[in-house]
Length: 207
Image (spheres, rainbow, N blue to C red):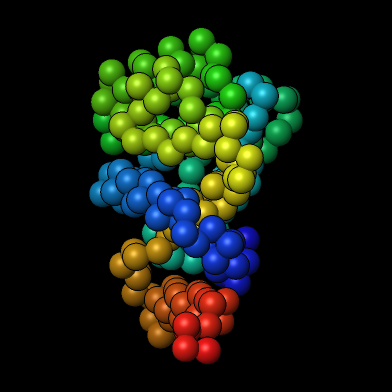
């Protein structure tokens, strides 16, 4: 989702807690992965794979100069012949330790097998973050969680993932790679995002 669409989405949601909550959660994600130098594991449920969030975070990692945001997508089912970046199964969670961050995306209740793996990863020292539909067991395991109850018809978890993905690369220190490198691109992108926010903001009351 580009900067203009994110700004429009934030405008629509102005007056609700969602933009601020997304930024707060994205801040927790940055604080977990950037000092650790990465180690972000992204996993969904048997019914839901967070493809879009994985793509958003890869993009934000590139644009913001924070490669630590790029996740490893952990999958419940890996088919033969799939490329390496799509061939990481649940066994990867068993190796999660201190310095790893496990981001669980679960619109519905996760299966017991996944909950057990998340529990073991936390006991081994991994940081657990959760974007979920309000499951109490998953929320109890998470160090930080952002829940979107299914009863909240005004918003869905996919939309919140867009907000979190966009916010994840904000407020990071740019990486200096020359005038035409990541630093210059990121500053231009930040200016465009601020301009988009200004263009889509409601007029002052005196108008």
